[in-house]
Image (cartoon, rainbow, N blue to C red; front, side, top):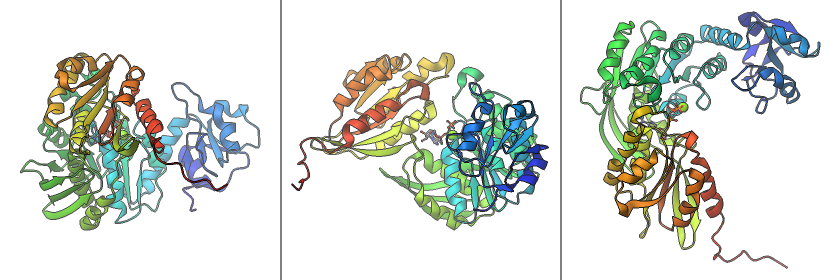
Length: 480
Ligand SMILES: Nc1ncnc2c1ncn2[C@@H]1O[C@H](COP(=O)(O)OP(=O)(O)OP(=O)(O)O)[C@@H](O)[C@H]1O
Ligand SMILES: [Mg+2]
């Protein structure tokens, strides 16, 4: 495995003191002693609840090549321990990230937006990876430590690099985009997420618009033409000095425009015009939201100079990210049922996308479409109305039965026609038995809610209960 960083270059970038039996180089960087790989540099970051310095010894025992620690903590560790000592560990990680960006020849793409950042980042990884070596952030590493860590992990040889940038408060994106210095910045969409901290969609748009501050001279902003905040964002981009604004969507004026599409139960086919070039492609995962994201992906790929045909072809391999539409087959007496796991998180935009996905799902002859929904959090005063408002898409796509948990979902529950009320409970745990009892062969069932609504355990319970062969199946013959 080739080195990510030589120790000399790393120490210079971080203005670190070297001590102990240091290796010559490291293959990677880690901030988690549980997953640190052999030889990696472990950064002892101090988080809200834990101090990374408490895990330095564990990380070194687990195979870390060295640890980056604060100078004032240096004395806690053995003299021969392989350490780089710095004033501030998170600051040093950002310094290393800055050095990574300076040494890199990669075309850099940053992705922000209220929803769809990870989905878009993963699609970019596929699309650009078809053209050349592509580095991308892991998971949703999009905050004050996730972005510097992801950037500092970028190999010098990468041709493309993709970074997710997130925020829950104004001012958070500015330092991150200035670190990443993207050539292309995508804002997927603006939607009511973290609304309680912002109050209005315009303020959410303003916070996302901070991404423009870091765009490289001559770089481009890729914006959702179908979103109500489009004009506002385009003005903000221009005001920040961005000269190239590229729009995507269904709108006839979009530069990356959806011409035709067909939504199937487990994939989509798309015809689009991307910056003047017509492309036809298949997306390996279903949902209109992913179709729209793919327009931004291909626009960004074209702007980054990638081969558009190869990029589009690669999207055939798209898979939903974990908990964002992942599918499992449940085995029940008399047949199987489809479980769509959307339990990763929820807000009004992704909830509507998931309800549409359920509406598209194939069901058996007697099968029903069942939604199991937990509260969408952090919506502030508009919370109850945004929950109640889901009754309309639920009816429009033909969901047969709805199970709800949580105080906010009670507003939806009351708005549902009695025929589609499956069950209500105060908590997800309280709802679980009713869901387990309701599912039958042929059904398609989708589970979604904010992380804090704890819908994940319902998915786990369904998988546990119905994963094994149903009881009536003959046991395999055992030789005796
Ligand atoms: N353009 C979109 N519109 C609506 N929903 C979307 C869109 N793209 C993805 N989703 C759905 O939103 C949910 C979250 O997707 P994803 O993880 O990509 O978002 P994210 O912005 O990275 O979220 P986070 O802020 O938690 O990192 C998933 O259920 C996904 O299917
Ligand atoms: Mg994410």
